[in-house]
Image (cartoon, rainbow, N blue to C red; front, side):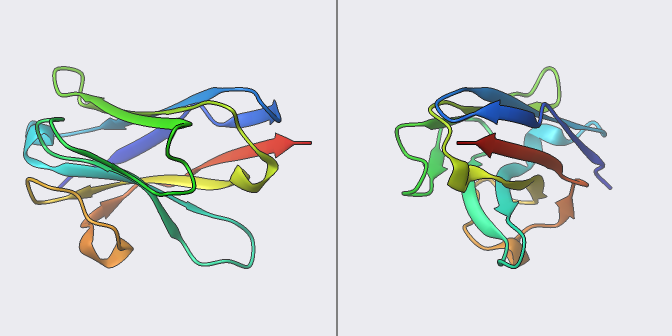
Length: 124
């Protein structure tokens, strides 16, 4: 069992930055690939970024490439999403997720555990 708690969301102006954190419970965090997804009102949950269990491989959605970075610290049981050059269209609830695998996945159904989400609002 893995419990995930996101933090770091908030209100920011367009062009600004935020860093989301996702703290995981359990001693097997390093056995999980991790992902970030987001969901805007009235829209489906969409993939943002994923990272392999070791942190050696990362994947980013085309819409955030060059602006967002995913990283992890297995010693701290934490995965991060650094978001720069934020745009109003990045406004959504952001969720982290854990997948019992060495590599991440692009679809929500591939993940085993989810956090409760953190709101990110980007004003224009």
